[in-house]
Amino acid sequence: MYDGSGDYEVVKVSLGDTLDLAVLEALGIPMGHIYGELGAPGWALWGWFNNETLATGMARADLDLGRRNGLRRPALGQEGFDFDAELTAGMFDAEGNLHLFAIWSLWGDVNDDDSVCQRDQNALTAFIALQGIATVLINQVAANVLVDDVVCQLDQNLLTQYIALTGIFPVNPIVLGERPS
Image (cartoon, rainbow, N blue to C red):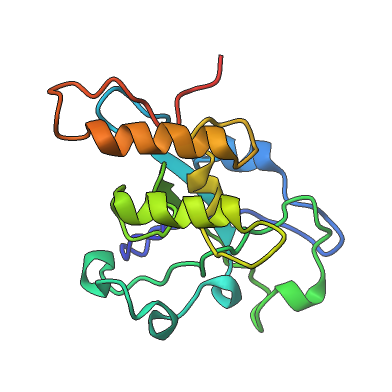
């Protein structure tokens, strides 16, 4: 687990194989999402990352690293490990191990600062408006609040409603990351 506890699972793999998601699920390793409920955004599995693809704290100096207990996070815009890729020698460390870490993000937390707020809405608005013109880095998994694999105006509309209603109503009627039917 990527929580500083040192807990981990060992799965045997060989060069030329691809990683079998069913083996990981059978070991109780989360592969899906924790979907939202009323009043709570829930969690999105951002992806599985290895040591090289996790950003350093220096690259994320804008965040309060104390809330993360010193754990590294992927850089915004970064995608997780491709499980369909053939395992090659360069992926393993000197001892022959491939270390992967599951990274979770709040649905709607497009700037990955552990909150869903106006800053996320602004970043998502810029991302949608500037596509093809400029690069705006966001966590696209967290931005996909409709869970339809497309980040678009519909996600922005739902995020806008969620932020507008948070704290106003005792039970927030907006759900981010709702389980698809």
